[in-house]
Every structure is written in structure tokens, then in C-alpha cells.
Length: 294
Image 1 (cartoon, rainbow, N blue to C red):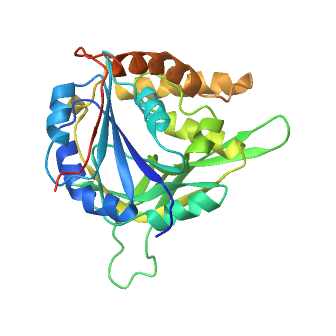
Image 2 (tube, one colour; image 1 turned 90 degrees about the horizontal axis):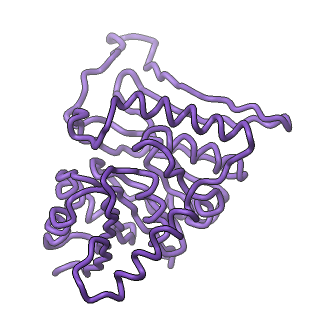
């Protein structure tokens, strides 16, 4: 195994299923040589510490941000800042891995590319949307939604927003990504001025592609623990978040604003974290690093 550093970043708020996914993902993450950074953005710090105090989990760092509402982009920017140089693996609390992604991380580390997971299935499984009959010469139907951004200089940026196999229900997971930390920092990370979350994964892909990187789609299976929107930290319909964020980012593109809020977020929160790190009093922002218990 090479000396490649891989850090897995999980944004979190009030998601108890993290205990299940982290426990099941631990052997795979350890095989990848990846530590984990869980960024608590608006959730219960004690509840998260209880989850992470379980025995035999991958080595984990907990970062607590004292905000009132979950912001996935903010959580990811702070997680990226906390990560060591190398490859970051952006993961969610409700995702189960089925195999090591280290070889794909190695590719991202040595090529100008980033990787998106494209084999997500649901738990519990969904009914197939279409299954060809026995003896059919049609094997499967794959539906793809691709956005093309045409720029003034004549270049075109294409992003695969959705790819769905109607038979297996395997689909892209654009928010689950392997990318070099330095590349994310170069485009300013994510945009935390978004509402909650929705479209931040598409936006960061557009900006990474404009940086000159190639996007690789990995057909490795991952499993998504299905849940209703009452499990989400929402202040309105999810579609409203996505539509508002999409409109906001398209307006930014029109005036040439392609840099995320990474620097602003780090400057804002690092001062708080640094101050509280040196304090001996109980604090609302806490970085707890816990070695894996044997």
C-alpha cells in the first residue's frame, strides 16, 4: 500500500443511522487506509459522541459547529479544511459501502480527475421500473440526464446529473465523490450560501470540470438507506431548496463567479475553533480525536 492519505468526510445532523453505516463501513474504510471526519452541523453533539464512542470503529474526528440549521456545504468545507493533504472521500451518513475504493482514490491522486459514485441502490430495494421479458434482445434501459453549459469562449462543460438503470435501479450519487483536497480548495470548495443542501454537488462538479479535471463515474455498488423527508433538517420543501440553489448558482456563473465559500468559511470558523481549542472550559465547538478502541 502506498503512502496515499485518504480522509473520509461525513456531514451530519441528527442522523442516528450513522452508527449502523459507520460500523458496517469500518472494515472497508480501514482497508482503504482512511480516517473519518464527521462534521456535526446543527445536530446534538452528545448524541454524536455517543455514536462515535462505540468500540471497534474506524479512527474518527468529530467537529462540532454551533449552528441552528444543517448546511451541507458549510460542513464539507470545514471537513475539507480539517483533512490532511491527499484525497478526500465525500460520504453521507446514510450510505453503506460494499467494497474498497482505494484503487479509485489512487487514480484521483495521480491524474487530474475526480470520481463520482454511479452504482447507488436503495435499502430496502425498490421495485424494478422495467424488466425485459425472457428472450428479449433488449438487455436494459439506462436513462441519463446531462446538462451542458456553453461558455462565451466557445467551450462547453457537460455534467451527468442523473443516470438511472431502470432494471436494477442503480443510479448516480453525485454527492459521493473522491477528489484531491488541493483541487477542491482551488475552486473554493462548496458554496455555503446555499439553502440547506441540494445542487451543491452539481455546482462543485461544474467548477472542477472548468478547472480542467476529468470526471470519472465509478460503477461500484453503494447502498442508500431510504428515509422520508421527516428525517431531513428542512425548513421547506426539498424541491424549493434545489430550485433556489440552482437559480443562485446559474446567476453566479453569468457574472463569472466560480469560487466557493471555502476561504470565508474557514476564516469564520477557524478563529472560533482555535479559541475554544485553547480553552479549558466546556465549549460548543469541539474537535475530538479518538483512536480506534481495541
